Image (cartoon, rainbow, N blue to C red; front, side):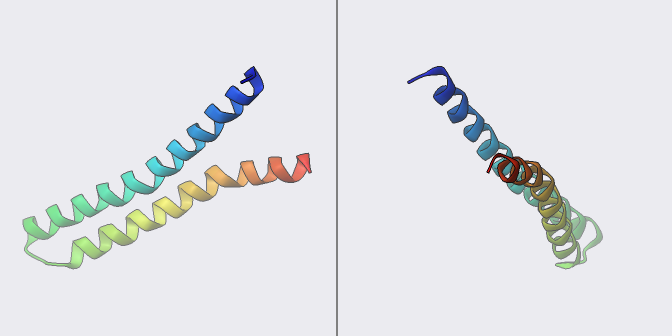
Length: 78
């Protein structure tokens, strides 16, 4: 393997890691906060659903801002 191939492999792996992180952490975190809020205020499933919605919105925002520069770079290279 040459050095450029190694760099590209690690670059793709880093993007995959970031995507996984941006998808899993906000959704899991806000679901946890929603469950905690429901238990604290005794309002099942209100905060769970709010937490899920907020987690999904943040995930879409973060993934969008991660992928747009990559897509623009690919279009410029083509």
